[in-house]
Image (cartoon, rainbow, N blue to C red; front, side, top):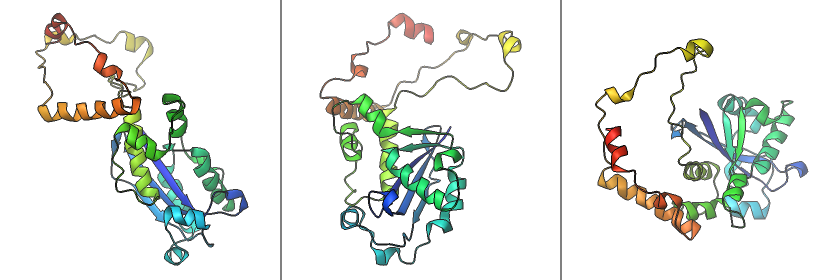
Length: 246
């Protein structure tokens, strides 16, 4: 599955009153792995930023004056995002600006070019009701290091959000191999079943450093929950189960 974590910076808070995009950052995940195939644009918004917004992102009119306009980067952005699942923190804000910019070009809304949407703010509110769920708060709660974040930046924030999303959804990976090749129904039902018990499968224990990293993750979750996460309460498997697995 191809997913893109997306973030933007803008001249202000309201696309409907003339505020514009001035930075876009996208981080690519494929099957929950960071690929490094990221996308980043600074954009000339053709207007000044509001003082409050400028204090957040620090991108001055002078710095942005020689950057491409949105129309110049729009096609590359659209093709990069096409058919991907988009992950945004507080999606309504970013999509409002993207839809406005796409509308200026006579294009359909942004999400019509993509396959789906995950709003991590909505997910966080479900996971941590009544708690602060800003990106900074989630970084602290989930043990994601954001010490280098002094100003907001679209690519930096997308990179942080990628780590936050992976931490929020850890354990949801499927261990089932996708065999969907059109051979299903009766043919699939008649496929020969092979028992793994006939093979001598080694049981490989986690290394000391891997156990330490795992404990660090659990400690971060414990801190965020102000309690003990369920993974610490999971009893070890019976000896008979371990023996049969081997």
